[in-house]
Length: 377
Image (cartoon, rainbow, N blue to C red):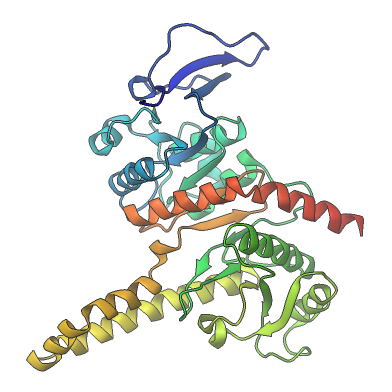
């Protein structure tokens, strides 16, 4: 039997009972969520709801919406609320009773100053998306837009978990064996204290275990050498803190060993982490460019390339960021996913998969519990 059509009912926050008037299919909903009202997606099932910034990213809204189209077909237990220019969104959107479009007339661009933009552009797709999570209209949110603005939206709108001093950006980066590793922080905080790195390690370990399915994940501290006494005051003190925990702390790891899978979780400050990330991205791009140039050199090399085309594609997939989803902004009251600015539909689809896994595994709740236990010691 076809599943029950999703409907919208408005619920007053004044304590009045929900309206039980005529049901309105989500696909036909005009897309205006009034302040002080609650959007309820009722489908007859306990569906997960994800809020999406459809206007964030280099290729928005086309690639964002196409990624959601794929996710709608792949995840029948999930409903989506898209925020952005409704006319542009509907040009790409496939009809579904599990997708609502909310029109917004403001966009936070990549050049906007993050905090100012979040405070001034209240009707932007990004801020409205974050507000939906805060108000309980959605379980998690995804944006490929301005990183700083998304972090500000996460902090000021979604809110920080009590006890977490600094949220951290935590993407999964590739390794040569295809396993990948979680690294944090990669840019949320330029500076950090040893206690922050300890919290990063706890959050990263929980994510690796609950979402990535790694039993007893290995935690490493990024440093200039593997010896315990190496590094600056930050890493030396962080080493001692990590050594005293119940985490599977394996010690210091060097940057040259990251892609060889030296650890399942690697912690560092945001300044260092962001440079490592950009170096990996740049090196991978340059390497593939050089390989392509070699194989396109003459007829002999072109024939060779044709013979190993599938193997080269497999290698590219291992190093492709879009296969790993986005960067989770760890330490907030709900999952917030930062997709790459140049995300295509595949990257958005995988970001949805990532957000779903974080919600299903209750990563936020487990982080809250871990931090409470840490504070009690």
